[in-house]
Image (cartoon, rainbow, N blue to C red; front, side, top):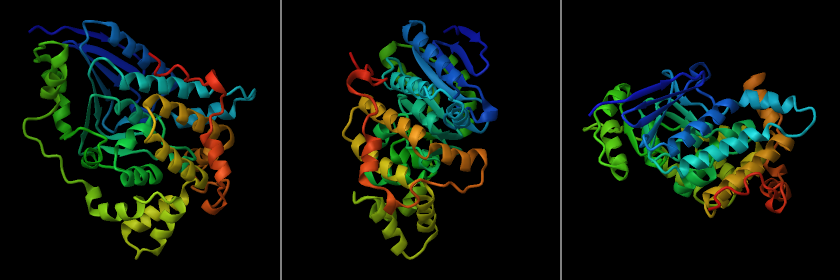
Amino acid sequence: MSTEMVIEHEPEIGFEVVNRVAIVTLNRPRALNALSHEMIGRLSQVFERCRTEDAVLAVVLRGAGEKAFCAGGDIRAIYESVRSDATRDKTWLQFFIDEYRLDYAIHNFEKPVVALMDGIAMGGGMGLAQGAALRIVTERTRMAMPETRIGMLPDVGATYFMGKMPLDLELYVGLTGAMLSGADAVACGLADICVPSPWLRDFVQRLETLHWDGREEAIDSLRRAFVPPANTEGHPQLEAHREQIRARFSAADGIESIVRSLQQDTPTEWSTATLAALTSNSPCMLEVTYHALLRGRQLALADCFRMELGIVYRAISEGDFLEGVRALIVDKDQRPRWEPVTLAEVHAERVQHFLASPWKGDMHPLEGLGAS
């Protein structure tokens, strides 16, 4: 079968079609392919083009360079946008609105999407990948949702897709920002297959040899290109701590009870690191994230995005986000001044305020999301 190739050159988004498969490349390797607002807009255009073109049967989403699929959104750019928003008209909010719409579109894309999460896959990168029909990781994958460290919550649909995990694992990963290996990601249900990283270097050549029987069989053909005949996924590192995670994070009694149980443990490397993460992250956003994750398990995807946007709005406009980014990313003094300082000072009314929508009725920016 002859192969047709069309190549376009974009500064931050690469696009080519190989044998009816669109290969979309996040092309900011020096920034670990972190998403700018311009990239989100371009990706939305590319996916819409792929949706409507009969010549495209599937989409492959990958990151440029050797280090990352996508390290998330460009947090520093958002930080600077918020700080320079002298008119207080919340222009920065459009970044999240557009990002969530893109992520939702990928979750509901009519054609198979393959996400190659080789290297770092965090935050906004997870938002792009978790809607894919085939989520591929490697032994080099380093996956996390570390938003509570900067005064945010795991967003980009995380309150939905993490809700497919067992509750203890969801709370552990979502609250601590724990780093997962490729094998861990498969074990947690955040990836479908773990393949050797070198296997992905030649995937374009394998795509060229595919014979398409029709759109319905496209995902089976793609598996032949991306899943090696003999594959060993490796041993999940989380298994060594699974009982401790289950014992500490299964009961839905709140963050303070989790922290107390860890403090009462005989110290181990795992319990010490877990306790350090929980006691250094934003107390307010830990509580908000805890309740948002529980609530998200009962919500449809579109409703999760709407809930997350409201929480992000409050976290940035009146919460700990600016201080978290200052301390961890801008000044890097690692000394965030959270408000309030301790979990005991986080009042239930404050948590419910973050969980309540800032918009009345049909004024929500994502009101139409999911409408037929």
